[in-house]
Length: 264
Image (cartoon, rainbow, N blue to C red):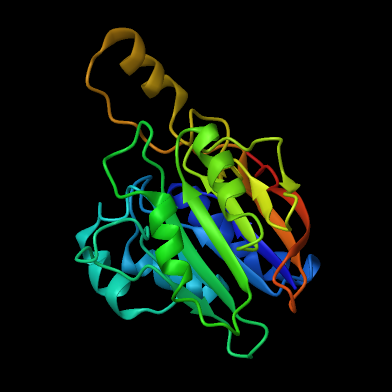
């Protein structure tokens, strides 16, 4: 099995490039599943039903979210009704959404998707380690492929969770910092790991926002709107190769797809 996990989709440039190219990417890279973090897809913060539906229609099989999950209240019904989208599992039970999604119809080829939030330099949430233990108990025994999106700031937190879950899940892949890291590997017990798979959107930017606006805010302290940038559009993520029978990862490869520059 080959799975592509796409990092934080940022704004219109991000969800547009995914929607327009995901079918081609699936065919070219012989992918069985494509999963994406879409928490920044709506103008850089949150997700709307329309964008959710466009991503699914284009071929995204599962969607994870992070700290901006509730920025758009209109997404609440989608979180409660749809089966392929997850909230962070260490959010309260009363928070909208489900903490586990199972995608795929064929037994032996299904994938469990879990999202977790870090706690260092993030809003207060429950322990991600305890939450991981609890939600893993609910994964059906015949679902051996388990992908975890760890949405966190600190690389040490991400590395520790990867080690903590090594051998119990197929992959622990980091999101949130929007910068791809050079540490993709298979951990000793068969779990694929990368601290951050990077963002999907405009790389001529500061984490997806226009450079001038961020510079002004930092150097002058004037309140400034951070608009989503528009240049150097890339899809970033990681491709995981998996042994379906064991659920162990056999390979991980950072993925970067660059949109061709548009003629002026």
